[in-house]
Image (cartoon, rainbow, N blue to C red; front, side):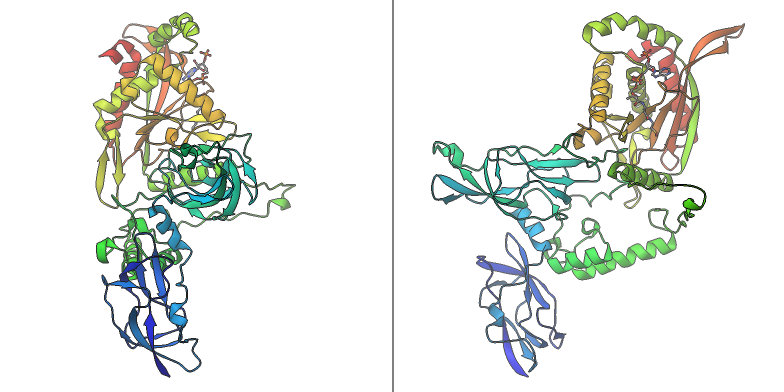
Length: 546
Ligand code: CAO
């Protein structure tokens, strides 16, 4: 045993860094490379590893202290066979893989480095990802040495809603690729290095790009990967991060959270500046387990036995094929909604005889405008009016925080049947738009959905969904609520029916409506009110103007 100082190693260019977590205490035995403490610069969190195996005798710094390369942070007794050596303390600190994720996103734009011969080096970073964070790389579209044009796709990332390509902001030659497939990317992460040709040597060319193109969802031709676009998965496919959350946690804490399957965004940090420490992760996991045991947590459907499959081949020939990503995501969303939401469906028939007469009278006008007026815009308008009248339908439930989220906007999703599966584009501010505008927008979004051209933002933010099978057939159905919305309107095929007017039966065109709702948020009386309002509005469309 010999006593040895534990020194701050080379910090990779950082000058002074702050101690943000001390991972060991005096008397503790450690192995070589075990983290002693975590320091943080304005760019990265780094764990300082133990220079050898042995016993910590003293830690001479505390959380909040500023240290620099060569400073002594503690002492340890190194075992004779330990890996400790005099210069071990100056080894490169272990910068775990996950650290750069956080670090890079906070990094400032690097100054372009000039290379010789009319070219310069650039480091390409991930642009804004339309609200997404931590999206995995599923494909790297370029190789080192490739010559590419500006806007050529560099990598493809995929969230649970969409596949996006990140385009190159420059024309030039691809240098070192800094990410691998499976890496999770957020805005600001470094992607790759490029040698960019200086064209004409004007200053503009040597500036960082004014604005890197936003990543585009992949078109069908470009990708065999089904871009997954399914009923609005907010809240049901992912848990919303805690309000205002930017996660602050060191690499060891991130690793622990990953191992335990804990979402750091949902954990309140008790360290300095709200930093999440290991104890916070343990406490969170413990509380979640306790809640689940007591049945007090958010229902997840866990504990329900899975469906056991027989050997189908004993009954005849079978062929197995992989589910597309979209099918898998849709299946998961449906199951999650079905298991989490106590569903009830309210039925109603709306008399649309007059509405249809009016709609058909618009045919010539529609041809002039190049827009087809179907029943859908009337349904959108009627639902927007009903949502405004009965705002308890325009909410989401946050069961974890025991809060009702009330929305003061009216965005409505429309379920679109496409060859690659169900997609739900969203029409924004339906209450502020006219019938023609809604007809044009719904047709355009439905076409984009069929062409797999919807952008992630075009599938987000719905308060309510309409799923119309009226063009196909059926008398009624029970749609599944598109969580975290609390209601969905199913529309079946209108049919002529004999309706008693008090004196005699009249032939009237009746539209079957099926309103499924989340019975936690909406009570039965309100559901009956909602369908009654809809039926009145559709029965006399003049009232849509009021
Ligand atoms: N009753 C009778 N006819 C109807 C109708 C109804 N409820 N709704 C539409 N129609 C008619 C239209 O008027 C049109 O007829 P004409 O050509 O004679 O005018 C025809 O059916 C086709 O309409 P459409 O489907 O092109 O247009 P739309 O605006 O009604 O619907 C859209 C658009 C995107 C909702 C639809 O194309 C679609 O994809 N529907 C399926 C949605 C789905 O799969 N939902 C299931 C989700 S749950 O698994």
